[in-house]
Length: 131
Image (cartoon, rainbow, N blue to C red; front, side):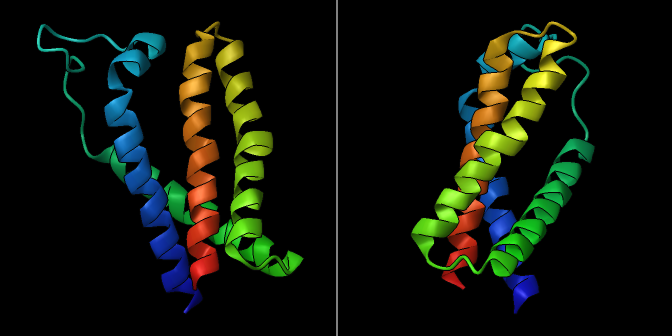
């Protein structure tokens, strides 16, 4: 049952990420320095690898969050959501900020990617609490 719980939570966060980045595609590509063609899409196309890796990453995050929530005895949607929000805001987002600060990337990139981490982890926490 835990595996299905983790997979559903990962899928929910991954789907949220798809919506997040589709909505913020233009500002994200601008902040990330992605070269776009006349059609506004990234030049050179994009293979499936980033999508596969992001799905695997969500499984890892959801699996570890399930373990942490279980070990800490955290139950209920509210507490699980707050824990997920905290993980995204205080663990993942600062790391994203460091990775963007050293090469001098715009802070807007940190806000977009960090926002996904915060809300994605919160969604994982909510879904994990539902099972």
